Image 1: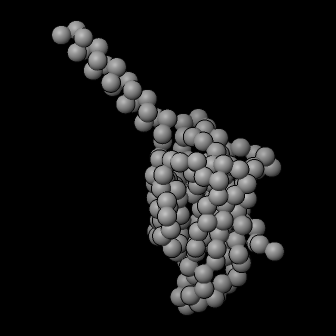
Image 2: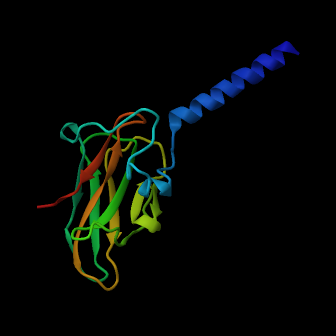
Length: 162
């Protein structure tokens, strides 16, 4: 009887330990859009690393959009586990457009965001952003890239491919 009790305690420790280590293996929840530290993970005491130390780049194929146009956005620079990106209008800073569903991503249409859908290491990730059907203007992409659960860079901003 005591052996069963020890096994149950050990099992509970293993299960709860793995939950805290994995965090959100299928991407950021939609409330990441509106928390006080928007677009940043709430991973315990971990905080964003200084932007000037980021090994990552977000590169967009364009910063201008027209009705129904699409922009390719790529994250690269070093291996990473996760990401959370938003599309924002350059003038108003409002969420804008939508993301095409691509392999290993989840989208949050409520706030024009795309996030990872698995906890695997990634060398690069490429997404397709859809402009609003009847608008034109300028867009930028901003968000967070996670090296791992506790090491991440937030408020990264896209560059336009030359």
